[in-house]
Image (cartoon, rainbow, N blue to C red; front, side, top):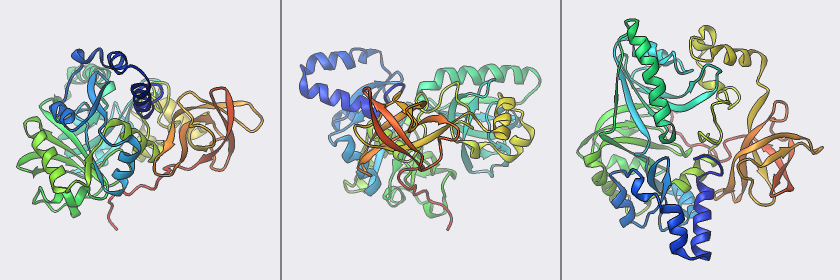
Length: 408
């Protein structure tokens, strides 16, 4: 979502439904409902009280009967089940699929062990981010990746354009878009114990970023130990005809502790975890170096380049970027996207890209871009909200410690 973010959209709808004529507000937000795509879990969401809103061309639940605050806290204390089937999963296959993909992303895909993955970024010719993506090497001739729903059309067009040129030169690569599958994200401390009831695979041997194709609740699933909350958890790509049954089974096995959770809490959870939202914190004009994703540029890729925008990105690695993404804690009302950031002398040094009230920390948190040198933790700033300056301080991210399951 662009602009203020999902959390703010959820709060806006909630306030207006409470204060105004509900039918007129509903018409304003849901007038295009008939034109929206629906996941196979749509009816399941509505039955369970999901408040459906337009998002990236889809009708998606922003929250259920719980408030966004309650859902965020429950994810960290127990667990959450998200429908993220609007996101686009695809496979690249062929003996040259890694060589091809490495022309488009910054990661060292070749160095991944089979059954492992990493976050990466599709870049353009100027080094800007086209999208962020999780890439998994299933085998040396099979790559599985997931791209954002809002970027699906441009990502697929970008990949297809370069694939045609690559294949014209004799490259062996083909692709399949997994529209026959749905995607569920099970997150939180109960994720593994609950999911273990539904599979014979020993989940204790699957670590953060690991990938397996295993049977879950009677269906062959792509399982990745990853997520977008900072918690331990899994993303489960399941054949769509089995998605509702799997969602029901997960909720049943958790005995009510894992709750269906909407995009509103997903946004506050990822902000607490210091994770970027494409369209807010990453854009076509922002490079991975500026976004604080230098760690995702493989050592070999730094030496060899060979990806779109490499010249710009490698120069930034050598000389340092002019702006950097940073985290903030602030006083007053929560900062929002596009809030101006000033130094202690009142000079503009940047702007907020995501912000809100942290349900877990009970304080205002935000992230944004500031001039290099002003990004160091402890730097005092002023953040303008509705024309008034409030005290803030640059803070290391994540705001809430991550709990990824890694080998001890």
